[in-house]
Length: 228
Image (cartoon, rainbow, N blue to C red; front, side):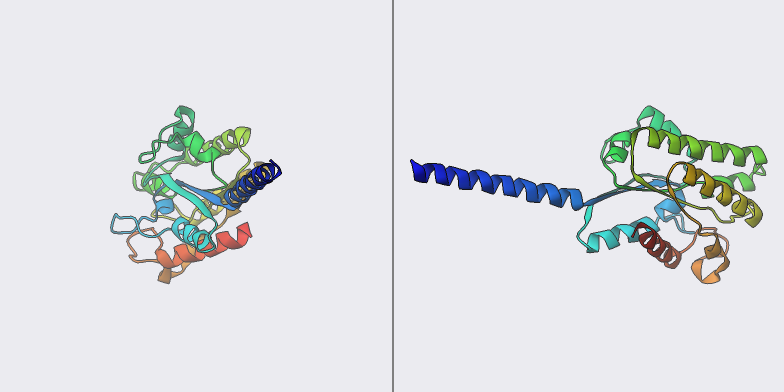
């Protein structure tokens, strides 16, 4: 009987130890969620997605055997911030996983948001880039962060904007300044990438406002430094 109880105790302790190891391992994993427009998706001048800063960030975390999951279903070319807020309000399902966006966010550890570049580029070409449009963008960004912070304590990084078409540097700088203040209010990180647009080596095609993979690699490096 003693041997039987001893064996049972060993099995029980082994199972408990296995559970604890698995629990700790799972907790050590990082779930990365990418939200945003074409820049977040890594769009190129050729109207196809290439590697983005999110992909490089994911690869780095994966190389350290720390990646739990990566979800970029809500990175969509020409997505606008008010549409993203609509997704949150409606709890829209992911295109591939069919997991609601709130559940995706709830399971995340790091959220990157890069949105506004497509919107302002499009508006500028339509001659609709007004002060009201820019103010509404900032209000929607605040709504997004407020909505997230009401329920979730996640690491959120907002990527700043840079000039595109008739969306000029002065406006980009002013919006980035406001974004930085909003991030401070909601305990989010802010990464200013406006300097990248000055380097011609970071463009594949001068007719497009999208940066190339080299710029995305550099942005990913900055994100890693920020997170570390």
